[in-house]
Amino acid sequence: MIFIESFWFGSIIIFTLSIFLSMGINLFMLRYTGNIFSKKLPKNTVRFSTARKPAIGGVSFFACFLFGIIAYLLFFPYDRNSINNIEISAIIGTVSMGFILGLYDDLKNSPVWVKFFIQFSIAGILIASGISIELFQAYPILNYILTFIWVVGIMNSINMLDNMDAITTITSLSIFTTVLLLLGLKQDFQSLDFIMIIAINGGLIGFLIYNWYPSKIYMGDVGSQFLGVILAIVGIKYFWNFTDTNVLLVNSKQVIVLIMAFILPITDTTTVFYKRIARGQSPFIGGADHTTHHLSYIGLSVRQIGLLFLFIGILSALFIIVILEFIPKWSYWHFFLFLAYVLTVFISLFYIAQLNKNKNLKK
Image (cartoon, rainbow, N blue to C red; front, top):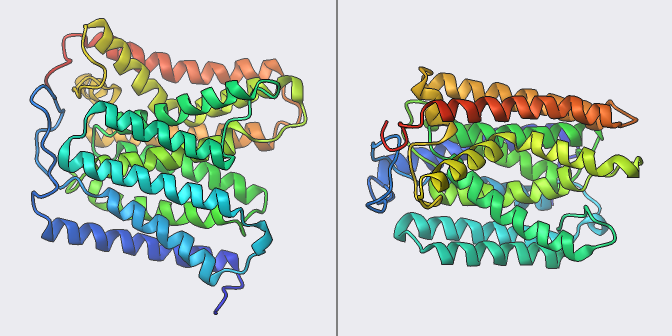
């Protein structure tokens, strides 16, 4: 067995190969799948773009995810005792469940109850494997409940965010890159998580080449459900459950870091739920009333919206790095300072959505 002695060199190889693997898979899908995976939407569903394009880009994410894990186990030197086989099995199993759920939904439009059943099952498997939120030390049952809410919520939030070219891809890249920076600052280049996320990022960049406006291919539910699972896991491991010596204030730090990392999907989902429930409409029926759509209604182009989301993602990543690595003594003053940033993003996007109340059902 050949080992790659330099993790930096190996990481670059994995990242580069993942980009090309993703590009190759998506190019194949564009050339040979045609309209087979152009999802047929329910009659009462409204979409911002009416163009029919292959919605199968998420296959490249899953392929790069598996490629990263296999490459790590075969070619990278590691301490076998440091590998948590139960955790890895749970991650592979739950991510595969999300992938299959999304693929089935793209082909058959699965009922809502089926989606929720699979999503709750995924959360249950993660909890059983030891991947759960650890916010309430004295009340583990509350942690389990919160984990169920988190996993199901993020899976649906990422699915709903996939409503305009490149938006979900950019948002996911910003969150994953934040984790890579945190691992890098801790000199944790030799972990499976580092290589796995490097490979996923390569897959996302390879897909973004075809998904940037004007897109040629969509990720589909197969992509958004995959990303929902892996982002929920990453959120638990690196934002919910980071260690801190200032125990009395750690909860406020956890909350602000988490919300900052996921500010875009949280804002979009909250806005959409509020607007649709206020109209007496099911929040799970698609519509052209997302934060991205309302930004277009005030004159921003799709490219500009993508760049705006990229800017917010980069800024959030930088603030998270500052919070976790460069503020040794956390205080409530810090909490309120960074809360001001979070509220600025949320209120700005929510307010813009409220300016366009009459533009909910058409482009």
